Image (cartoon, rainbow, N blue to C red; front, top):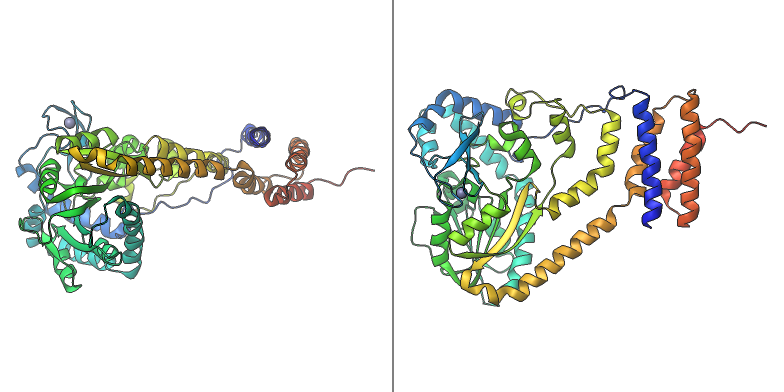
Length: 466
Ligand SMILES: [Zn+2]
């Protein structure tokens, strides 16, 4: 199978090099796919407006904030990296390499800001409405429901399982847990979210409330909330007291090692999210999240990468075609603006890159779970099963990477754009057709994409003479 694929890949690459040799780079327009906004529930215009209000009326508040040390390892020494467009300095811990804002950015800061900037609060209200939408709720229910389905079987059956979500927002996670028969409690720092969740009949406490009901919990989660916390080690240590023996701690965090973050820095859109709540003031990677957990009394059991970056967005940025967040915050619609050839090659190698992201844990989001240090042995079998299942998923991902089906459509599109009168191209088409037909013979399969391509190439060729 590999040798057949190698033939096809070399045929594709030869055609790609031919297109490039004809110096048509840039001549075939990609149509310029626009790049979507960073926060699924916030529109680009609301985001840009929110950052503008903050920069005009709130940003000066940063100057008075007390400093803080590395959230992952607790060390103080750091080097300056960059400043976000909403005014936060980002530094790198010289001990563990964690990227963070060396300031205590608490939720109360924004309560003060909203008091003298009602326009900014109006933007927050709009965002809250969009987060309450059925679409947003459904996607959260599905995503978090998926995590719970993986985690709950690892817990020893306790009837009922008590679940705590730290930073539960509007409480969609709690709904997902309830439908699975779990007893669900939430903790949140936004008073607006708490009020809305209460209207929804959910038990959500403010982060400053020390007396939680239903404790201890068998499962505690942080779904993209640790990155917003001033002292995540203290919060995790407190959670350890609320965690039942044999309980699990699960989390997702944005990944500092994602190429978008490492390459774009302040131009990466989600770096600029500190205009209405503490933004991503901690950026963890696999090593630093493990360091944080270890320091807080936990043993990290497993990590996995989730989602994939928009490869075209990154390459387009590297080629200087756009300036990322800098342009998006000026209400400009940014487009990939890549040549057809580049897009063809990117889509050919895209599935391999997505695989690399997950295997090397450079995906935009990290998912993981941990337990009390002295419970690690208790989870060894469950952890082994999880690793096994991850390997199986990766293998399935590899098996799905069939150049024959993914590249043919792109190639066909390229061929559509070629001139019928170009003798060199005509020759290439003959060669390509021969290769495609020989592949069809070798594979002895009714591979529809190959047949379609062969038919198309034939239609581009002049009828044989004589
Ligand atoms: Zn550190």
